[in-house]
Every structure is written in C-alpha cells, then in structure tokens.
Length: 346
Image 1 (cartoon, rainbow, N blue to C red):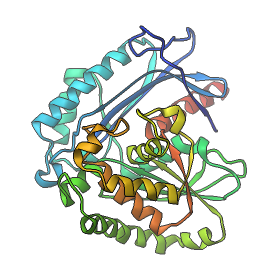
Image 2 (cartoon, rainbow, N blue to C red):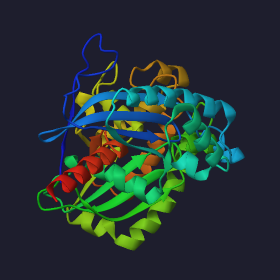
Image 3 (cartoon, helix red, strand yellow):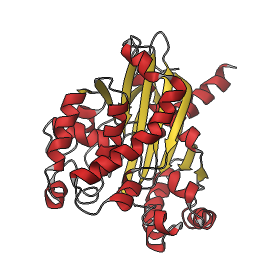
C-alpha cells in the first residue's frame, strides 16, 4: 500500500504543533539512532498521513562507543533529555499508537539494557531495539512513495550515525512500495567513521581510505546479486536517505538554511553531488560550521558521510539519485496505519 507524505506547515504560536483532527487515530514513530533522536506524530489522511507534531535533536548517543563499547554517561543524559521532550509530545494524545525504536548504538553497547530501563523509568518511553535488517526494511518502506515504476530494481541506502544500511528492492509495476530482496548493514556510520578515521579536518588520503573501507564491504554484496548487470541494462534506480544526502542537496540548491520541501524527492545527478563534495572538501571546520545546511553539531560528520555515500555511488554508478528526507519513522507510520486499516476491513 502506498502513501503520499504530507507535512502540515506549523501554525505560528502553536509551539511546534499542528491542528489535530478529532475522531481520527493518532500515531507516533520514534527513531533513536547513534547520532539523532527523532519523533513524528501523525494522523491518517486520504492519500497518506499528515504530520501534526515532530521533534529532532542531535544527541550523539553513540559518542565514544567504538572505543569503549559503552554508552557514556554524558551521552545517556543528553539522550534522556531529548526523550523527555518526546514523551511530553506523545502524552498530549490520549489514544495514541506508537512504536519507539533504537538502532545501532543500542545494538552494540554492553550497557544498553541499563540505559533502556533507565529511559523507561524516567520518561515512560519503552524503547524497542530492532535488528539491522528491520531497520533497513523500515527505511526502504518509508521511502517507498519515491520509487518510480520505469526501473524494476532499486538501491536504497540510509547513512546513519553508527551504521549504514543498503537495501536491494524489486519495484512493483506501479512503483510505490518495493519488495525487499536483501539488505546489507555496514558497521560504518558518520559518527563511527569520524571517530575511527579523522579529526576535524579530512585530507584526500584519509577520505579515499574511508571510501575504500566501505567499498570493500559493498563488493561482497555486489557479488551476491550482480547489481551492476541490472544497472548496465538501465534497470536500477537509487534513493538516498540521510542527513548527508539531504545536506548535499540543500547546498546544491544554494539554500541559506535547510528546507525539507525543496529537498525531499529531488533528483540529483552524480556530477552535481560530486561538485558539492569537492566544495565541502575545500572548506575548513569553521566554514562548515557556519553553513546553514550543516551547523556546528554536524560539521565534523559531513565529510565522513560523503565518503560513505561516495563509496556507494562509485560501486553502483546509476548516474542519478533521488533524495529522501524520510525513512525509518515514516516506515513505522505506514506499517501502523496499514495494520489498523487491515483490521478494520477484515
């Protein structure tokens, strides 16, 4: 089942909330990743869903995890502070169905159970740790409305903070939701890559080393499915969902600050992407921090993200990429709404 995706413009003075339609169910999806805590609250619409509230904050839950194997106390406190805000938004709706998931940082931390218990006790949000496979499938589900029918296969990639998921899909004859053939979860996201390879600045040699590290993993996936053969026949489309991809699109468009409605769903040629990456590589940390589409919280992560994306584009030179400012949370919402509609019609 396909859905259009509507974000209602937030009304001035609404403190980040839009009007709730009485009598319609309310759904919530929370994605707690290695770098971000993000929430969507929505109601079904005729051809999709309408976002009535949202929240996003960089918490860097996985900061230092690669070296220590543990979630640090500072990272936990930052994340619980963000979860408190999410809990307040959820509690505004008395009959809400939600799913609140955590991904790579929680999958890999030895003190994850203690963190999840503490978060539930303090905020009331009970986090569900999902597998890398389910994470990839949900992200692909969320991007489904951007699939087009004229190419029967799709590569969807999601660059996270602690990992990157690549999903290989068979697309239906009308586009929309695709059928997952398989997915690859690579233990390299922007935070892990930054901590493992570079400091504030990234030279050419370090950048190419990051690209080569990711391509080595992609090569095994390519050998299993022969994706390049389909690509050579013009049968593959590509969707990228992540802060890295949307940032590059925003810079390409010359936006002074990020605007989702100008970015989501836009097609970009690989040459355009490479031009922005080259521009970013010439910037220093201060210049990246000052850019309205990047900011100080992500200035050290954007080039590691570019290296991960560059590896994917080099491995599978489709030629153009569709930019998605949507993913796991939208996939959760689609599934929750579809499940309820199936029960009603049964």
